[in-house]
Length: 264
Image (cartoon, rainbow, N blue to C red; front, top):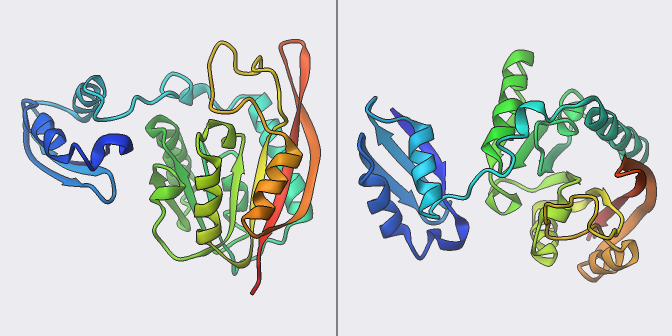
């Protein structure tokens, strides 16, 4: 049996040899090829072990990151989350053009509650997430619906190395990204001239939305984020509050930004 495993990006390149040795030491593994550029390891193994055992051992050694959404993935598609995603989709469909000539990416796609709405309206959808558990749910949907124009990537936007695309969409995932500047730079590089980066997320809050979980950002100041995008040569086409989430007996406003890359 053979499987490709995503390694911890922070140490993959510097620890590729120890990673290879660690994987080879697992009973049942007989072949390992580490790709430092892709931060992956191709592992060949017998029935003496299985992929779950291999991944758990690598997580314990900090060679592979734990899946933070492992316990949430199967029940992720709640009526509340579906309604929230649909509001976002409806807003951007009214304010951004989608047609059969377009290629789009959804970063932080989760189980596909947003991106799957565009499969029949564009040429190609690339869906990216760093949670194997979320992607497993997504891939079940793709199989059940026989969707052929969807590519799934386990990782982040940095792991996308294909052609430029027309739009990148990210919904309720930007607050999980540590380095916002790096994310925007990669998006600018990946989007075709005249294409769009579409962001939906939480307005700045006091940390109570995710409490007791800690995330990289407790929402965003809309003006600051717009200025950041402008500084990286995106033109703001739309920036407004479009909805809110009821949680903890209060309302948490959500915003949408549609930012266009320079056409020239």
